[in-house]
Amino acid sequence: MKHFLAELIKSKAGLLGAILLIIIVFVALSAPLLDLPDPTRGDLRARLAGPTWDGLFSPGPHPLGTDEVGRDILSRLVHGSRITLLVATAAVLLGGVVGTILGIIAGYKGGIVDRILMRLVDIQLAIPLMLLALLVVAALGPSLRNVVLVLALTSWIRYARIIRAQVLSLREREFVQSARAIGASTTRIMFHHILPNVMTPALVVGTLELARVIIMDSALSFLGLGVQPPTPSWGKMLADGRVYLSSAWWAVTFPGLAIVLTVLSVNLFGDWLRDFFDPKTRSTK
Amino acid sequence: MTGFILRRLAESILAVWGVVTIIFFVTRVLGDPAELLLPIGATGAEIDALSAQLGLNQPLLVQYFQFLGNAIFGDFGISYQHGRPAMTVVLERLPATATLAISAILIGVLFGAVAGAIAALKRGKAIELIVMTLALLGQATPVFWLGIMLILLFAVDLGWLPTGGYGTFAHLILPAFTLAVFVSASIARLLRSSILDILKEDYIRTARAKGLTRPVVFFWHIARNALIPVVTMTAILTGELLGGSVVTETVFSWPGIGRLIIQAIEVKDFPVIQAGITLIATIFVLINFAVDLLYGLLDPRIRSAR
Image (cartoon, rainbow over all chains, first blue to last red; front, side, top):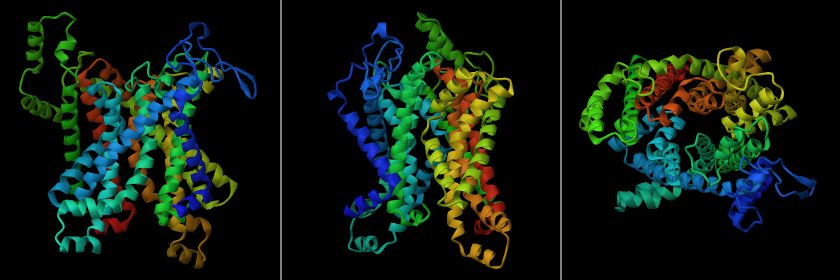
């Protein structure tokens, strides 16, 4: 852990990503405690009001402006971050658990199970993930639970492939061989001996997947297939603001910046994490 | 090589079959199209009659095999919304999607390759930092937001380009550039690290030691080897691009297959959804197949290993 932190501090990009990420998570968690206007209540007298600043350090009532029904954009962004992070984390965890388990089974058992699973992965890879997500959300109906399910569905294959490859080499290692020799059951070997050894790659894939899933989640909301109003979501804010593009630049600019900032910080941290655990790629960075 | 081609061909056909199967079963969950097609307040008898006419009252497996049999010939039924064969409706939109996707790939790969090569060869210089920062930003920016921002700047504020639509070259610029940004960001990052890896190889030292000029070393030894991962990445990105075009086409009102599918999902026009996704997945599978064959030409080691 000490080594981990020391390395993180040495890497400027990784540290920047980690700090930004901590701030974003902290703001999201403390949203109800912050003194912000109600994100779902509009004020029609203040429709599409521009960002107000009395001075550089004294924000007005709506520091980032209001949307088409007069809701405070800053408040909606902060509350929207909770939904975005919740959806993305849940999807990545769900996809990660399923993908890791299937990857271990495919890699360790081999044979027909492996071939069927990998064929399934190939088939799924043949459908652009965005189209698959659209198709399934449209079928199940847009809701928080369904969006999480769909994003997890687009995510499991990435874990399964990478974990399987790891397991193929772990399978031949001595500690696995000896566990088998003393008569440990297949299940025990897979989940007691192999699982702890694939947690690191799973974590790295998970971090990078988080970034991809956040973008895809906002794209689904943008197309109206994400969490439903009045729950604030970044993608939906963008879609609503687009109509007033020529008169209210702030309504589309800030939600987009929020997405970029979040994805960027996750990517920076994820890239660093990958390099940290894989010194082979570190040398070229 | 023939065995390899045949095996990859069989795998590609299997993948398309899997896609068609998934699409069939998922779209059947979407709801009963017969109920949807009739005006509100239609009687049960009317719904049953239409279901029988559309073949929806048959057992699911029977429907599946009929669907599969027809799909082989590109027959996905008549579009509920357009009243014409679904595949015809989809194919009419293919030129628009192809124009956009091909332009984006060309611009993206070109920009990305140049930027990635510069970043690798000018290691440690300011230009490397600039290129890599832009690439990171490019990967973190959702295409639809970038599209909206470009519309805001170039169409709304400056008035140089149209906000959306289709027809002239001016209409193509913004959507193609929007989609290309993501492609070039990924290509630039990949090419940079693969060139840096190659620079450490013994054969580069050998090439330099025997006095080859810089351009010869670069184009003959570095570029050829660095190209292999770029080709793979381009194939993968095509999938992202075809998916990303759904949102981009929506943002720019571009009349392509992606926008058609979104509109079809809204009104539950099954035949069009099925035909559209099948066509895109088939194109994607074909591209991957072609890329695998291309490897053989690029890298003799792969040719003999398989």
